Length: 100
Image (tube, rainbow, N blue to C red; front, side):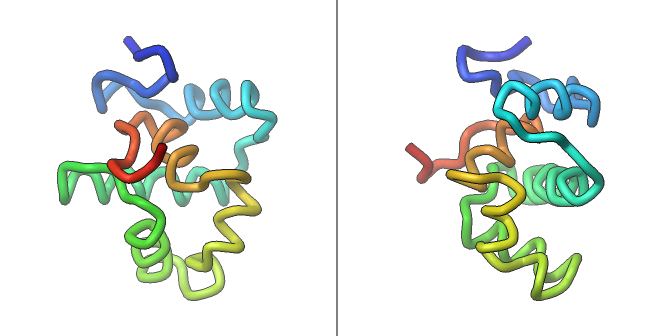
């Protein structure tokens, strides 16, 4: 079950295959590097109860995968446009609070 913007209504429904299907709709071919970030965002949500906006997403990725992968430029290459919003959508999370 999802809302009109394809954000999943329930966290357990998510699978990497679901993310791949949603990614194709946005012209994003999901590879291992995407899945790494999506899993970290889901862990963030489990820990804090909300989806990470850009700054917490960068900090979370940096802590787990290193400075180079935690940079906003890297995340924007993987998820062009609005990385935090796209990550939330592809990870099956609610829209981050400060994303339009």
